[in-house]
Amino acid sequence: DSGVTQTPKHLITATGQRVTLRCSPRSGDLSVYWYQQSLDQGLQFLIQYYNGEERAKGNILERFSAQQFPDLHSELNLSSLELGDSALYFCASSPRGGTGELFFGEGSRLTVL
Amino acid sequence: AQSVTQLGSHVSVSEGALVLLRCNYSSSVPPYLFWYVQYPNQGLQLLLKYTSAATLVKGINGFEAEFKKSETSFHLTKPSAHMSDAAEYFCAVGNFGNEKLTFGTGTRLTIIP
Image 1 (cartoon, rainbow over the protein chains, first blue to last red):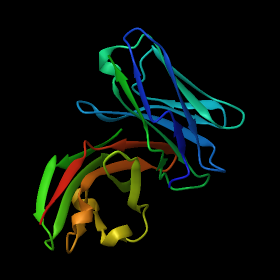
Image 2 (cartoon, rainbow over the protein chains, first blue to last red; image 1 turned 90 degrees about the vertical axis):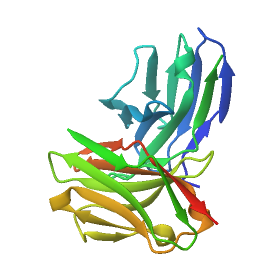
Image 3 (cartoon, each protein chain N blue to C red; image 1 turned 90 degrees about the horizontal axis):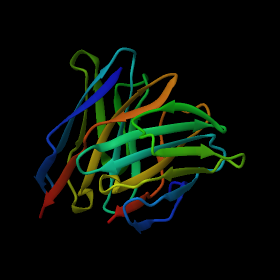
Image 4 (tube, one colour; image 1 turned 45 degrees about the vertical axis):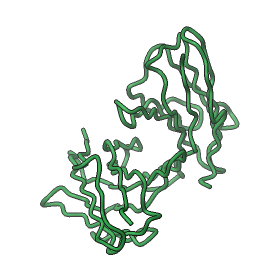
């Protein structure tokens, strides 16, 4: 158990819909990262938050948005869903003063039909 | 800019044989290097990391990796494969001050009884 909690574990929805994925980082970690894992794209970095502020942005679509709340949990919002958005979405956190290692949650598997 | 190349998307070895998973990196600054393992339907788990200390790094489950700057490589090895080692393995690169990790495309390891 990494200490990173993600909900829901599985989600099935239709094209055009909107979903929210939730992540609670490890106790004490201020940074939260979102990654997308798909068969054709591999593991892609989406976005990073540090103590409520956006820190880095990767290959995140404009239809996607995220935020980190004062209690440090984070939400990834995916809207106008397309078939190609079907993937595993991972949240990770990293310790303060660490050397870059990430601790991953078990992921949220999104299926868009 | 940084990138990772994992040679071989699938590797099969016999139980008890040497495991060798290849990773080459590119980084414009001194890198931090990581190996992660992903078991089916689970998140990524840190196996080991290199952060500019000893070049031979030992990790969990009997795995180790050697940082070779001249070859820009960070290959993962294990002397004797076990059935429980069957999983997908990801190499990742980061660096000091840049907390975003860049992952390779992964190598699926199959163990033959």
